[in-house]
Image (cartoon, rainbow, N blue to C red; front, top):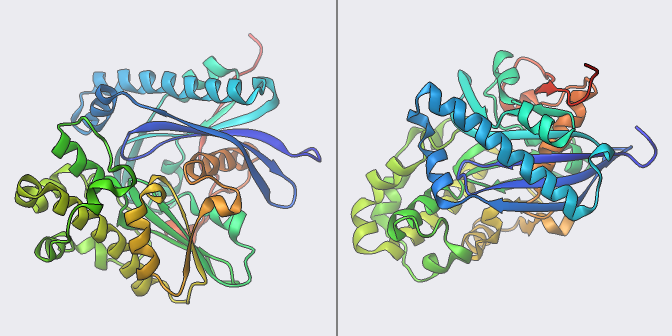
Length: 372
């Protein structure tokens, strides 16, 4: 690494499949990382619906989607670099998480977005398909972002938590010389998003700034039904996805309330999401927290964050932008870091987060260059 560090791009599409997020980062010596630029390219409604239906797709449909999404990811990387006025030859590597089609914790997982297409269309080496290597080593294959959390925030003298509110909410505890602890607490935005899609017939994909939740009231009976799932009492390490917390979860537990009182259902889902996070911290985090640093799309939902502020008191709840990381840039920035470590042959997973037997070099490398 030169004195100024290296440039890397990270690409991510979350469980909600609402867009492709890209981040350009500079990784320097001394465990320094700076986000230089980021953007999220929304996916059209039809594309999002096609992605969310891939769990029951044929082999031909999966194969076609893999290449189609690879082209979308490549396009997102090119647009990011053009907007940042960075030539591709200056970028060491692209780290692409891809789009999760299916994730069965600790058994098997599938992310699509063909890295060979990304490498060919950008001219940059690509590291992708990070989860299988951890599963092969006995881990859950998730969460992977805690490696980034420990790298960037692990120097704190007292324990603090990093909470990412994507489709699924995941928590990392670092600092204070404690062994990093990380796990998925359960739903992040996924149930709220599904409810909004059902109420609007797919015209809206999320509750912007908690507008619908702010007009509803929490239904206590519905809240009890939402907590009726064994995942919440399961001890870490653990991870989850839309396979557990998707449309069927919303329809099965919220159906009648959602039809009769949609804003009450969305208010209850928002409260439930915050409560599940707070109870997971109370139950599974063995040390007091000084602060909780929030990222992901859920950080933009003021109703959700207000719930978290009073539920997690006296820990201070702060957005990640306070530390120079935009809430929407953290996950793609994390995969940029994982890619840099992988291409240098260094481990990039935390066994204490995934439950693996050991740290591994996660990700498969596709080289863009080479002579004919």
